Length: 149
Image (cartoon, rainbow, N blue to C red; front, side, top):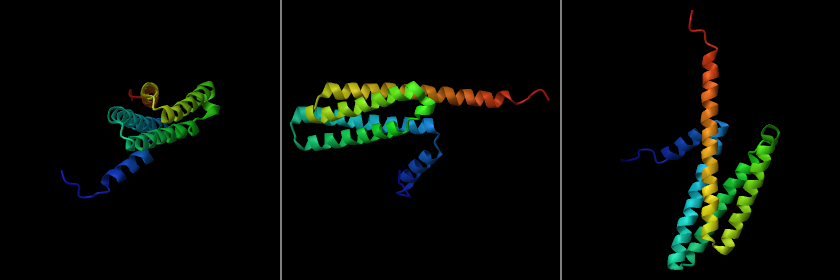
């Protein structure tokens, strides 16, 4: 498959982001965080097997990208609307970033896998919430239509 426009993928991604709702954007952030955490796990496994020092720098880059995304999730929280849930998520995201910092020092595979698994679980919960909210708002918008006339 040839690509006639080399920028098509980046244009598609940009359009997808610009047209996404808030919930979808959060899920996109979670997807990216999981991608970089998976990458970190893979690189850490390679490092453990090969003892190749160049992998340490790559592991660090993956973890830093994950931390940046988690920090973006932190700043997206609305404490007025989200109340206690937002405060709890803020604390959890802060803990993730602290743990990821520890992983860059200790290269603790289990710690990294644990964080990745929790992020995957949160992504699933957000996905369910977004789906439910989208479904409920579409039902509400249809409920006001009088189909009897």
